[in-house]
Length: 430
Image 1: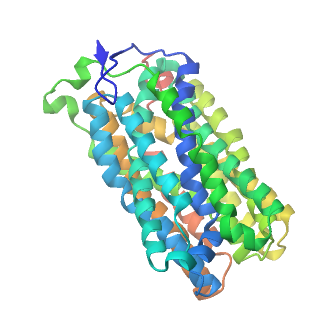
Image 2: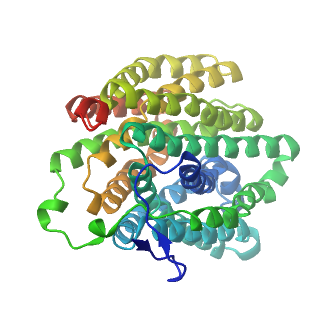
């Protein structure tokens, strides 16, 4: 059995499951590169606002920049539909190649767009166009790559394989934060506003050829049986799974983007210096790693639900006290200690994506997970930072992010309690 490459040449043999981890790492690395570029926009929101909305007040410029950040989520469902279905029909590998190529184009465009001072109103328009393309590409990334990992893994190691994807996303967050930290420590505020943030994007763009090379060498995990036109009963998806899956993703999405928002929150609400703010982004990425990998291993051994339940409960208990400590005594100690704790606990909820993906029929796995993830991200990821910033400005209450985050965790806990266990160790698949 064979799979056709993105350009229609160079047939690649499809493989049975149980792909070596070094090959799976190639998928995870590509995913990490895309998330680095995507998240860099959020981390440098303050500086991008100064560049493209220079005549606005500080809070208004930040709000507009975050709105542009949210606009990228609007095209994620379109990317999920188009590239997710493409991944079910043509194969996981071609879809992953195409999404990565589009991301590269968007990142180069973002990095090289002239400022408002140079070309006037055309600058934010171009910024928005590249941001929309960026969202389309990332929307089409999650479905094919997650389906690939589930299909490539031995049944008893699916949690670990998918955790590698979450782990490399965390590495991407850490890398973006470290780049921001180095740039903010090395450059003056004017230099950071003028061109320093562009360097961060160009560093990600420079790795695009490397990511394409890695993905072109991957085999295909979807065989002819999955490509064939199957009867409806073979493609049927439980509405209950869709609803519960989306609710679990709401928790992960809101919590993730609240944590990513901490870079702007530390500067705007806690009035901490940029060096401290960028440092927290790197810390969040590193802390997520300490949660995501153990969660994958544990979920393979004792099941997905026990790991998710304990992690979500601890996250709910910790959220309000952590934010209270940060607002009562703003410092790098409270900021770093609190966000590290929340990040580790969030990382431990990682089996969510594994649970949803392995419960879906292979013939429609890529498209379904892509659309489910993209629509959830569009609604809640795209709005989280804008809504939080608006509420903080309106009520002058820095505890707003804590209540918003805690509410999402309650929603996720209900879904985790109701969802069926999918781990092979519990269902007898191994």
